[in-house]
Image (tube, rainbow, N blue to C red):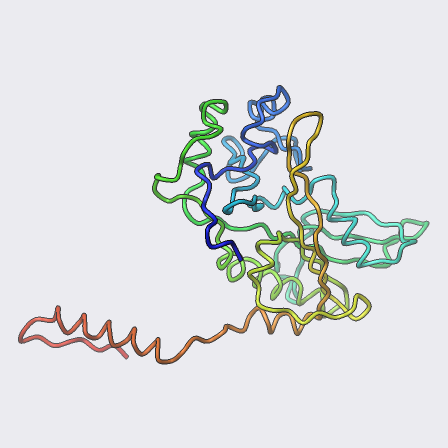
Length: 298
C-alpha cells in the first residue's frame, strides 16, 4: 500500500530506451536517438508497439517508485533465467534458454507462445527436462505515448516536465494486468505445462505482485510455480544514476491453489449492489416520459 500522503510525480516517465529520463550522458542520448534497447530484445532496436516508431518507455512512476511496463525490461542481464533455472533444475544441470516458443494443445491449435523455455540437456545435447518462464509486465491506463513523444522532442528540457494536468495521465493498471493478461496466460499455457508435470516460473514486479490475492505459500520442493518478484533499485554507475533489476522475493505455490486464488473474486456486500440498482432505477424513473413506460430487459 502507498502512503496516504504520497503524491503522483509530475513526470510520469521513469526510463526511456533503458535510461532515466534525466540521464543526459552521451550513451543515453545515443540510445534515444537510435531507439536502441539495452535489455536483450530480439533485435538491437526497441520494437514496442511499433517497429518504425517504437514506444520506448520501459517503466513509469507509480507515486515514488518505478513500475516495469515493458516485458523486455525484465531481460536485463538475463537475471530472470538464472533465477528460474534454480527452481527448475538441480545445481549441476547444464541448461539454455529459448524465447517465444510456440505451445499447441491436443488439437494442434496454438495456446500462445511461452516467453522463455529453459531446457536442461545432457553431454550429448539431448533435452531431458524443461520449465516455462512467463514474464508479466504491467498494463497502462491512460495515454503514455503523448508524454513520451513530448519528452523525445526535447529530452533535456522535458526531463522534468509537468504532465500532471494533462488528460489521461498514465498509471499502472494492475487489475487489467491480472484479469486480461496473467490469468489467461496461466489458464491456457501453464495448465498445459502443469499437465505434463513440469514447472512454471512467473517474473513480475513487486507492485504488481502485491495486488494479487493472497497465495498459499509452500516449500520449494513441493511447488510447481515460482513467483519471481522483482523491483528496480537505483544505483550509481560511474557517477550516473540508473535502475537495475533485483529479485526481492521468491514465492513458491501449487498450481491449482494459485489458480483458485487469483480467479476467485472477492464478493462485495449485496446491500451495496442493491443500492446501485435502486439508484439506477430511481434515475430511470425520473427521466421516463410522463405517460411512458420503462423498458425491462430480461
